[in-house]
Image (cartoon, rainbow, N blue to C red; front, top):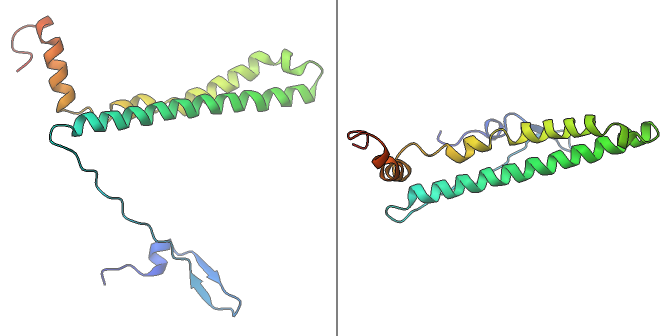
Length: 137
């Protein structure tokens, strides 16, 4: 009763074998292990992982933008004479749009775990002298 049936685990995907019998496709996923931290380092390590994720997302977005520009430039060059040069601004705008849409989640990736702990303590420490007494309590 504790283990779901193979059809539930695969969402109902089925293969029909050579003998005409239906077999479920069973895909097993290993459960993800919990991360372990030394005392006082969890917030710093989570921020580092989020910063890495955001940086990777930005790099992927730039690569996607260049691919879009390259593809559209080739398409323009094949369609008309000097098409790549004539359509430079349109191709650049399409590439920039793709880059921006791909990278739009990067700021959220960076700050999603800054809900308290280490980051808030550091903020209070550094900004406390600039604000009235009581703000840093």
